[in-house]
Length: 129
Image 1: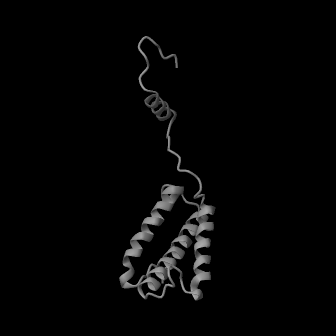
Image 2 (image 1 turned 30 degrees about the horizontal axis):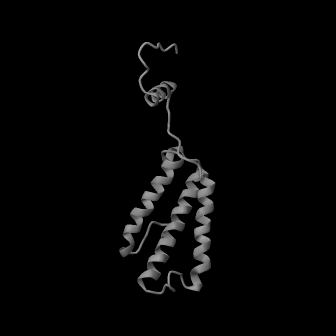
Image 3 (image 1 turned 90 degrees about the vertical axis):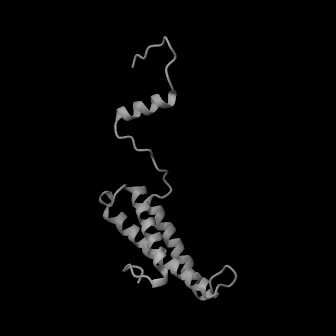
């Protein structure tokens, strides 16, 4: 159901959430889908499927007041935790722990950024570089 992009009618807002997460992951690691390796694309698609399933489980049990406090019923708890752990491992494989780097497209961009950070040169000093 989730893997095919089908959600119950009252869960359509989850689709928007999943689309946003997918776009964010693609941007984080490659900028565009064309820049992804096949493995990265597969990992992202699996993450989205698992995340969709997790969100539907949470919503279903929350609406039906089946939650035991803030815990899922025992019958689903292990698989729920396994899905969440699987997503964490997939995110690690994608390099989610890496900080986003500011993209500098040329040495001229770098020089301009550094000059802007340093501020104006004091009067009377020449730039020899």
